[in-house]
Length: 256
Image (cartoon, rainbow, N blue to C red; front, side):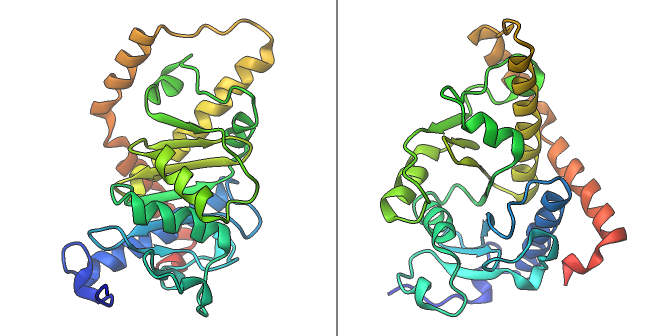
């Protein structure tokens, strides 16, 4: 039997670490709502708090992104088969995706799943791949998994396992006929992946809409460009910090 969760199980044993993680995750929900990435009161962001990834924080069932606070986040055990019978049970699709990914893929510390407009349209194409046609699209070259096994609402164990295995070690998963999932070690990195992928999807869709042939980079050039993004990885933390400063000024209750 697994040990019960306790505060010292946080990665570095610090209660403040979990508090900071809760506040970052709550901030991500508020920002996503501002940018129009929310889907009614559905979709979910989660973050692991235990070293094995099994214990994780996630938004409560059917709470609008714009209202989520740090204390609202529910602590769940991905290995607890009775989770869906509890008072704090998430909706079935949330448990299917996030519970399975955190249980099977501990490297995916933070997982965002949502249906942002551009990425969702891209996921609806017969070929939903991200073509490298500019800097932002090339940033994701070789880093995007594609799941074309859509089987309806993601609420069955087999669906969750397929999603987790297809994501693997990639930061981005295009879910055909569904939406998008992104994974990263931190909330700030996951947010940056989501932000730039949504912009990249918009660029690609606009290029398609022009009716002109795409100027797709060669694999060598796209791979070179993707590598050249690596020294700029600190942009994500700076960008997320900017948004948190805005929230601190305009919606400070997210930290509660």
